[in-house]
Length: 66
Image (tube, rainbow, N blue to C red; front, side, top):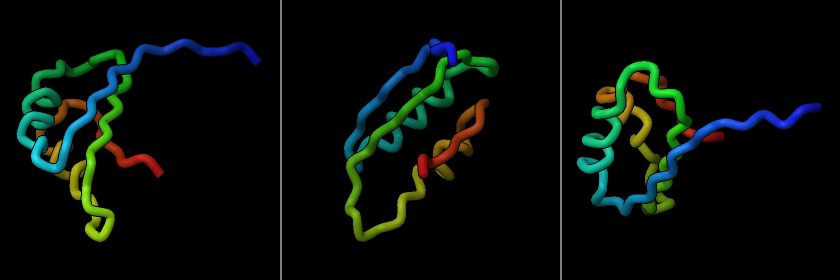
């Protein structure tokens, strides 16, 4: 099996960083060729809505990792 290389952008944010994340995601053009990995610190007792919130602003598919 041959290793496949790909570009990725990693972003970290606290629970208060949703607006900043929406700004960054909405600025990425359609066809952006790198994977965007976002890690956000949240209270583990609450379900994350981040993928839904960012998906409204993105020109790419947004998914929460399994």
